[in-house]
Amino acid sequence: MEIAPTLYRLQQAELERADCAQRLAQVIATLGDSSKVAAADAQAKAAQVALTQAQTAVRELELEIQSVKTKRANTEERMFSGKVTNPKELAGLQSESEALQRRIARLEDDLLEALIRLEEAQAQHAAASARLAEVTAQREAQVADLTRQREELERRIAALDGTIAQIRAALNPESVSLYEYLARRKGNRPVALLTRANVCSACGVSVPIAIAQQARDRSQVAFCPSCERILHVEG
Image (tube, rainbow, N blue to C red):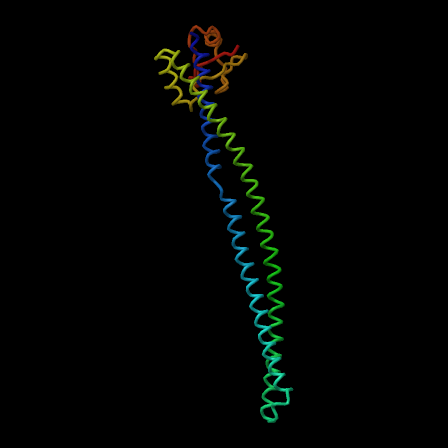
C-alpha cells in the first residue's frame, strides 16, 4: 500500500468531515433561532394593543360627547319650555347650558386629537402586521432551505464516516499512530503536497532532491525537512 497517498486521502476526508460538522452546527443553530419572527410578532402585538386603546379612547369620547349633548338638549328644552318662569332658575339653566357647550367643545377637541392618534395607530398596526407577514414568510423559506442543507450535510457526514473508517481499517497501526501524532502537532494537517518544483505546499520550503525523489517513489514515507509533515505527490 502507498502510505502517503492513503494518509492524504484520510486527511482530506477528515478535514471535509470537520467542515461539514461545523456547517451542520451552524445550520442547526440558525434553525433554532426564530428571534426575528418573535421580535416582529411582539411589535405587531404591541401595535394591536395601541390600536385597541386608541379605538377605545375614541369610542369613550364619542359616547361622552353624546351624553353631554343630550344633557344640554334636555337643559335647553326645560329652559325654553315655558314651564320655568323663575328668573333665577332660568339664569341657572342658561349657565348650565353654556357650561355644557364649553364641555362639548373641549371634548370635541379631545376627540379630534384622539382621531389623529387612532389614524397613527392604524398605520403603525398595518405596518407591523405587514412586517410580521414578511418576516414569517422569509423564515418559512429559510427553514425549508436550512432543513434541506441539514439533511444533505448529515448524509455527507455519514458517507465521510464510512470512507474514514474504510481508510483507517486499511492502514497498519504504525501508520495510523504516525498520522495521529502529526495531526495533533500540525493542526490536523499532517500531510502536505509536494509541488512539481519540489516545494512543500504547507511551509513553502524547497525540499532536497533526494527527499523529493523518495516522496515521488511512494514506496517509502518522506518528510518535509522544515515542517516535518508527510510529503504526498499527486498524480
